[in-house]
Length: 287
Image (cartoon, rainbow, N blue to C red):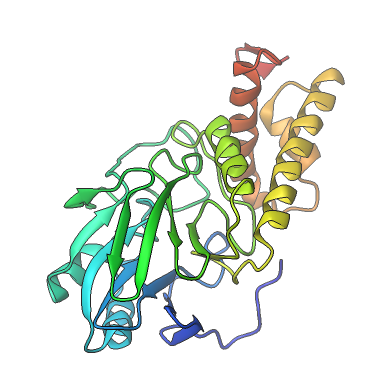
């Protein structure tokens, strides 16, 4: 998917539906698209913020302006990558709101990352369990546990409208990164199957436009991952056993600067396939 033409609505409060406003953070990149989208839920006296984003003064000011005179009752994070949760602390300091949502997590990865590193400063006052609800004036959010992109990833369902805030589990512009050791393809596929069985009307991802045909997109994402798995099997049957060689064949036409990141996804597939008894590892090669 190509980047949309500038100017992007960075810092502006857009309203995709009555109970939801969206503020785009100034952190565009090849992996975050036009930037992280922070969502403000509620239209009454109290609101919640989902994914406050990076600790950027302009973005924090834009969130506060969008909140206006309403009380911020909760700052909710889907996961703890540095493009999602670092603004939670300064926003809490400015408003007195509680930081809640996903569990804290810190990991030094063993390979090149293609997404933001983990936010080690994230310190929630409360961790939400799968199915747990938060409510305010006119809005109710239900937690949906979706591990895979990260082990602590959560989505949030807005019961009044049928919307689901999907963080990085499902994005509106690209498939998400699944980078071992914390990224887990087995868990990610199970989480996709979970969403496929739901009846959400629209997804609001942290990156990219709203997803208006959620089940159709999720079905395609599951098919895409199975297609990648089949590519890997065909390459191994042809004698290709090293991940860099697999990437060179599977990602032809992709910027070579992204090949290391693609290798993390291939590794995630191989670990999942190994757990199912389909492949085995022999040093740096797979068979």
